[in-house]
Image 1 (cartoon, helix red, strand yellow):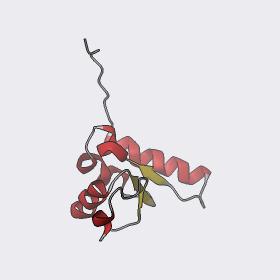
Image 2 (tube, rainbow, N blue to C red; image 1 turned 45 degrees about the horizontal axis):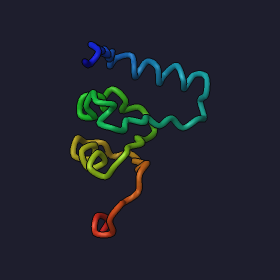
Image 3 (cartoon, helix red, strand yellow; image 1 turned 120 degrees about the vertical axis):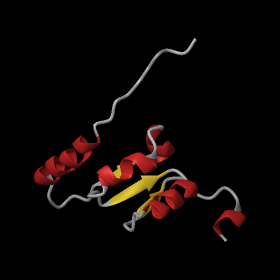
Image 4 (cartoon, rainbow, N blue to C red; image 1 turned 90 degrees about the vertical axis):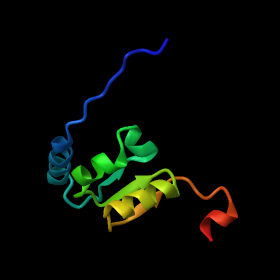
Amino acid sequence: MPRPISATLHLAAFDNNLQVIRRFAPTAKIWSVVKANAYGHGIDRVWQSLANTDGFALLDLAEAVMLRDAGWQGPILLLEGFSRRKTWR
């Protein structure tokens, strides 16, 4: 039987947290890791709240395409390589 687990995201807090980190580490590059569709919350729902990040780290190419289609123009790091040669051609 599944446990009734839920998570509430306060999207406005993401940008505030980025600002706090930048105050303490002003020269650091901050990347947001939002693999697995932002851990089930939906990349399309959370990426704009993280728009002040320096880059996004994603698990696969489909997520990268989704993020580009949504409007992100910054750097993207794929955390998983291509499993089939035809995928990257």
